[in-house]
Length: 343
Image (tube, rainbow, N blue to C red):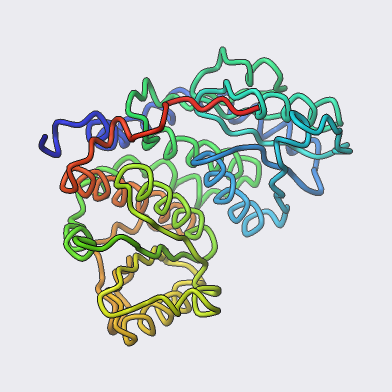
């Protein structure tokens, strides 16, 4: 199996076109939903998601809080599906994120949120899914069919969809321009050379992923994909937390991947990356400012909130290559199915 033989590889490389398709086909629904949120003037929002979709929700939490000052709290789907309890969500907005829109616990929580007074917004790649039927507004991801078990282009389109919604709600012209330019940046991002990361991980069974702010969500996603596609133990930490205990397991050559954006957290993240490198770790970072950590080919997008989307696209291209090098088929990870329907 070569890198270009996998469905995952094809879907990663399709990401720029998938985002372009979203930008072309999603405007009316985005603008209509943004106006509904603007009219509601929510004091807070909640998110409902699992797995990669929950990492999208974490990304949107940071984006909302940085851009609009509106907090987003993750609520546990089991509150509705298992414990059969209701939440008082009057006046809020509920963002439900699910590629398939089929998981019963996500659907039930979204239904409960709506009955509890929230404006319910579903982001899904299937606008005819059960999740869409319990929402006030549905945002089609327009990602097209995704056949590989590992979510890649649907993750990217989910992140862009949510960010676009927030940008339209906030009427943020600079961010809207950056979103419109994303397909061009993603074309370069999926071709970035991160082969040095693959070489550093060879023979290792553990890796740290680091981020801060919106990039922490991408660190979480990277750690999941290392596990899912490469059968590699990976842990994600905020750079503010990794020195508070986890650093104890770092030994010479320990691989660390630090994902930085051109934002206010970059300096702090670079400082931690350099400190880990000084301790002997093999640290790679998406920043040109590191002194001891190894800088990776990085595509900057002109806006700190779109930088993380380009970064995860580069990561996806690399992790697929790593899986193949380890003799693993990333299209069919062991023990996993494309759609996980939890109750």
